[in-house]
Length: 223
Length: 273
Image 1 (cartoon, each protein chain N blue to C red):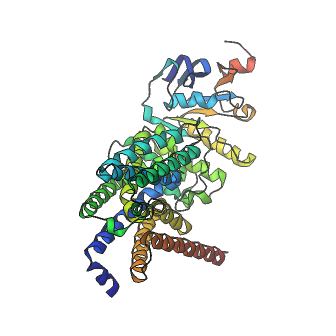
Image 2 (spheres, chains in turn brown, orange; image 1 turned 90 degrees about the horizontal axis):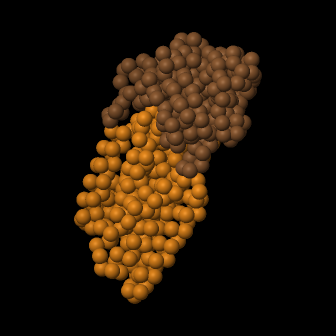
Image 3 (tube, rainbow over the protein chains, first blue to last red; image 1 turned 120 degrees about the vertical axis):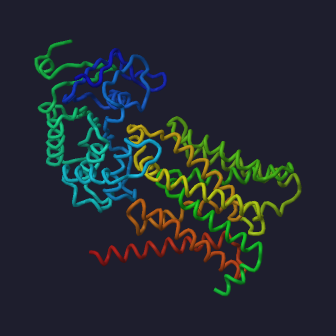
């Protein structure tokens, strides 16, 4: 089933176009990797898909509820000083299903426990988020994204600051949830490591975006 | 205890105590959000703007609070917007606005030729707390407490991770505005007691102090509230007993409390090793 598609989409800030002519079709169970140099506009595309910034031109059509798109932001802000327990962080993912009243109930707590176990961070539940290692933090944030009832998970360079072993473990975990039917959209620096998981590739280069299936990409077909 | 009952026998002191405790609660609750969002400087800037508009209002013979609160709210909106846009450096803009407001305030007071007022505005005066200030403080505290409890979980996520909050469909701008309005009102009310130069300490100290020892969001909030109220009461008692300026006494008690918490934290780290 087609979940997200956009046609001739231009993304950018105010009047500064960053990437033009983005055409993508994302179906249930897809694993899309977005590659490109630093500053090429990968994050801008993702933020537009999430609705954090408005598209400059073109339209995105969603066949999925907006709030079932989970998001793992790029690690940029320094949260190393923030007082928050792992539990407080993970349960905040449950907020997306709430309208005005934002109290958590029993089923929220259950969902948190399931996801804490799924991502192997159950024993860190009462730990302070700032005391975790980089890999543990990403797992906790993944658990939070999954608490948001996500059908689509957008990850912005989830391996930033992680060593090779932790990165591999994280990728395996993401593959596991992809196999369970969660659609993955991931910005990645190193395509050679992520290519084996992907079935679609979006290359962002010099203000253009080339969208191909993995087969087309490997055989170098231009579309 | 006898000191407290002695203090309560003075109407103006009991008014100052009630208003001060309530303002301390509001300031500490908002402080947690402001400090963690790196907005501490906004609080400081707003207090200077508060001084400027209070002085101008007095010089023009207008009702001080009715003029000052809307002006400070507008400036709060403005400062939030500057902070979000990367084009202008937020801290430089805050410094400019703060010093300009101070200058305008001092000028307008001295043009009227009443210099004694400046001291009251800058360093606060417990004599300036009126019956209506107390009423306003009670109302404000109730509103802030209610909003804080109702939106607690959303306040957490907007503070912790604004991008994620936006992605799950939370109107983060709305919450930032709410925080700005409440901060503006708290600062204007607190300024009369603490003075515009010292009010921002009421916002910043309790949070920083609590963060030494407490590691979850909820515990930091509860601790900040308690630290803020206790430091206020101790400061008031010291100021009454030894005839010290109130605002400064409260700030010094807060400072000592921060040092105490830091030392306890160091000892804890040492013992755990």
